[in-house]
Image 1 (tube, rainbow over the protein chains, first blue to last red):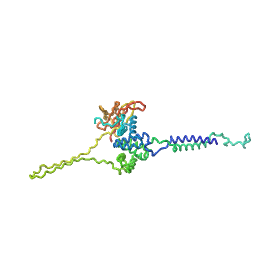
Image 2 (cartoon, rainbow over the protein chains, first blue to last red):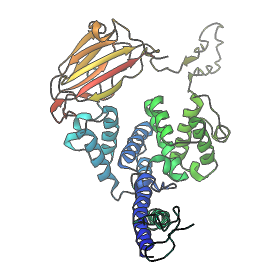
Image 3 (cartoon, rainbow over the protein chains, first blue to last red):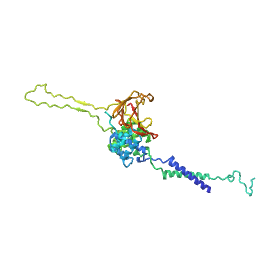
Image 4 (cartoon, each protein chain N blue to C red):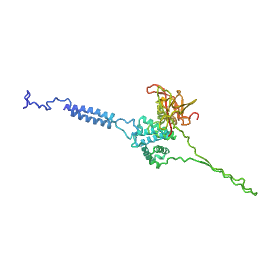
Length: 125
Length: 306
């Protein structure tokens, strides 16, 4: 009987470890119907680039800020500044940077590091 | 005839379990424990304490947020016209079926809701319509939303100013003099945007220790084939430089390059054949993948407009 109980306990322990590994690592819960606020940082940044390009297309700052509310960040101008500076620091796509800089400038968050990326008129034209 | 042991008991038969050595574990109990353990572990990991939700990908969004994400994709497309990037973003949403047709379906749904009550919502749906219509798709939004609320081109017509006839006088005026001359109508045709051979350049950045501050230019036809002998112009505050593709045959016919000075900003175009880049190429410091310092490398692609 003791042999049975000990074997059962060993089996339970090993099984529990395997189960937790499968449940947490190998096949973790796949969430669907998630809010945009839980998006990965990369996806949030990409979304902000798209919204910034949309702002350049229509010039509607209110709509751009409304769209960014979806991300659930408490301070949208500060978040725009943070993402823009992060893009510049990490040498991301220069077009994306220029979109973000335009949006940052529109919300009054233009910082010295962004100055070179402001949209400029062509010299001589 | 069975044999007896020294105690006088009958020996168990050769195949009897009493003749086999006793195993240290009970395989049955171990198996049952394993099954129960895995079941319990999975229950705990999936139900009681699932991993905290973070790093959600766009495809996991709610239907409403996914629609907003699609709107952002098409708004971005309306601005930069980068179809490949827009499609890649749509693919990341793991939409069922044709992702472009799915944009039409989402636009249709939004067009039937209060989303269109605001001008920004209307613009957003129009950007979606533009996107899928250019790819040959249709949706119910086509019939619900007019393509554009902008009026047609205005044609100014200067009408002739009527000249009043002179008052009658007692002395008859000989005929054939002082007749009002009608001014012919002048029609001002609407102006058209200047056409260019090449689309706005696509600019990518990189950070390479061996190539600090270099602008690499690639000029391609609409099939992506390199074109040699194309003039490319770089301008900066104090001057400009024009150079040609194909002068470094080892890099292919489409290639040309220009060395920037650190800290300066440049614009690039193909004189008379493309509009200039909308933002300056800045020779700013960057960090290479290996952690070293360099100056940003730009790769500029001019593609012939179809």
